[in-house]
Length: 265
Image (cartoon, rainbow, N blue to C red):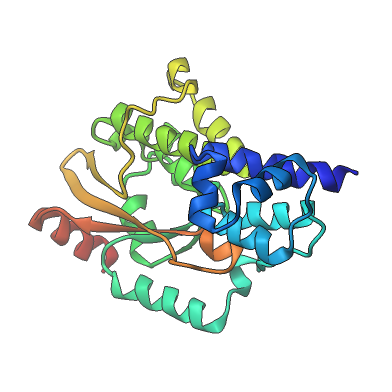
């Protein structure tokens, strides 16, 4: 049956993605190499506990773990609540983080670049660098803000380097989460804006993608510079939480602090 063929293919796919041999995975998981071979050929059917143990060791994203559980004939294990239906505790923690970061921008961003939450400073500070504020889609998203010439793009200092870094990040995410169409869609959107070099369609993995980057914006005499950090939830146990990115802009200088205090005030 399809169920019997699909899980073995997924297990082999993720093992090879992590550059592990069957022997490597056997040593790490405590499962015999012979049993692993049987699981990958479909000669043995895994238990639910075995599926979760192997996928967790292979650092498989939770959305893909649910997919693999279904493929092995089990129910999905990890919930996927809507962003506005996160637990009261998580919502309160996000609200507190957003508020405490004032008067500097902080956004909570989904896998496809959509901004699902932001503090009061974000639209005020970033909005000061929009050519045409009416061009911002609803809901707003980071890809439009950076790539659309009607928004921040003309005021991003060294835009080609910044934009290419975002594209590199999307290429990596797409490789990491190959089953998630939203990332492919987000990448396609970024590449479809005018003036984006066709060469960016080819992944460039020589560029290091770090959890932080420096961004400078300049519009006439208005200048800001930020260290932007990307934070994720540790051991989230929920698909939605695992896929959220908290992007915080920290001022690089006193001029930025003063501009943010004025704009956000």
